[in-house]
Image (spheres, rainbow, N blue to C red):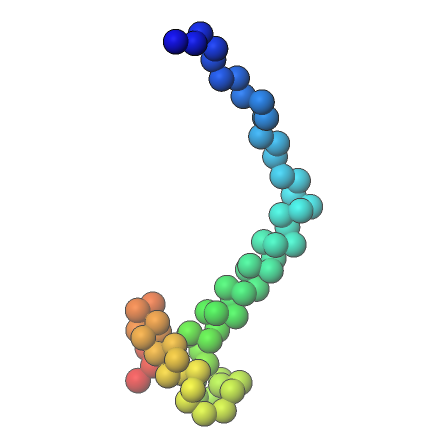
Length: 69
């Protein structure tokens, strides 16, 4: 048997806020867009004509508790 112990060779460094912030804003905008399409893309607030988006997110709408009919 060997008496050598594994020593950490790399110490984790914190990621600077300047590198995280643009990705956090982008992810937040994507989440807001997804919430809009699941929750409000229907009827008078519809941006896309027809029922294609409504039918595509219909089950997700019910799962999240948004009324749609």
